[in-house]
Amino acid sequence: MKSPISGPDVVHDIVGIGFGPSNLALSIAVEEHNAGLAADRRIDALFLERQPRFGWHRGMLIDDATMQVSFLKDLVTLRNPTSDYSFLCFLRERGRLIDFLNQKTLFPLRMEFHEYFEWAAARVAHLVAYDSEVVAVDPVRGEDGRVAYFDVVRRDPERPGATVTHRARNISVAMGLEPHVPPGLELAERIWHNSELIPRAGQLAAAGAPVRRAIVLGAGQSAAETVDYLHRTFPDAEVCSVFAKYGFTPADDSPFANRIFDPEAVDVYFSSPSEVKQSLLDYHRSTNYSVVDMDLIESLYATTYREKVAGRERLRFLNVSRVRGVTPAAGGGLEVAVEFLPTGERQVLPADVLVLATGYRPRDLTTLLGDAAKLCLKDDGDAIRVGRDHRVETAPEVTAGIYLQGGTEHTHGLTSTLLSTVAVRAEEIHRSVLSDRLTAV
Image 1 (cartoon, rainbow, N blue to C red):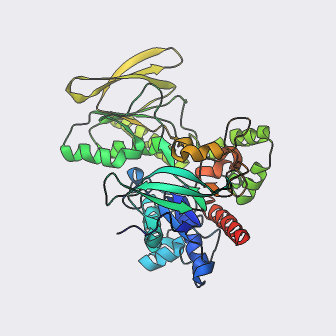
Image 2: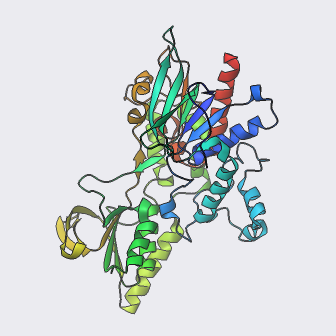
Image 3: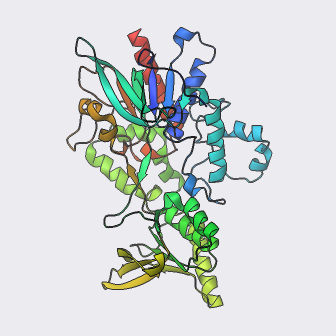
């Protein structure tokens, strides 16, 4: 598919950088706003995505893994319950609505929710340029010194080495997170981040490479899912789960705790003093970080018990432990040094695979924004200052807007990188962009 046509002579009201669920939700908000309006009243939007097609955590689309948020927290429902971009409308179109309802669950398969995202993305494909990696964001200064636009520069997939520039009154940055690799470890042929789990495991299986032992580092939901997946995928392998805790911590999905993800909770968090913000994060980390669904914890425990009874233990949990070093072994394998923290005792485990289920971290915005980053104001902790409408606070001469979808946990709380408020956040950004556009007119 050809990219949407534009250039510096075309000024977009908003250019989205990255096209995951966050900017997808924003594109739908724009599309619904524009429906039936005259051309001069529409919001001109363009979204740029470096991947060749839509994809969201493809490497962890395990066939039986379910979402951890309700299907009602889809791309649109909390913003517009009547939208025909909802998950329920997707199910109806696919002929699975009644079948889904008969399951009596709020939590769809992750694979099915990804299918829903693809379905929605296909409907707004005319707003998106895929295979378009953004390499620079340049402020455009007028003769009066004011910055009313940004030039967003992307690679041109049709002309190697060439670039295309798009001028925007606003940009929405939603680049997602990048895999976190602990200090002292490096990704390699046999050392993966869990974000690559399914394709990497598939390559091993297809090559017929023997997997005698796989080691998984991490204590969160992804780590537990990775352990379970490898245990089922390689039936002759020993799978060792290494983590510093004594045992997996259950996720707190109780009703009152879950209110931390409500839109109103974002208002409370945003207006709180810094010490209260930190307290809220500390109190409610168990809703999101390094925690595992109770059903999966119980399933893994049941597996270990069955194996003890059968006398063939393939699933091992090396708790209160850390990986202290990895060296290549003869034959292409690994030697993984694991320390038992209470005694300091170390053992070296031969392994064929080490999977790092060690989470993600926000991408460095300064690398992408370049000179534009110098226009962003910082707080006392050197973090970017962000308004309630997700717009970055900038130098006085800047009238162009930078909106962040993610990387705002310090200002907006735990929902910063989660799906829980993606529809509401899209509405808030859309409303802010529209208000600014009307003011400019």
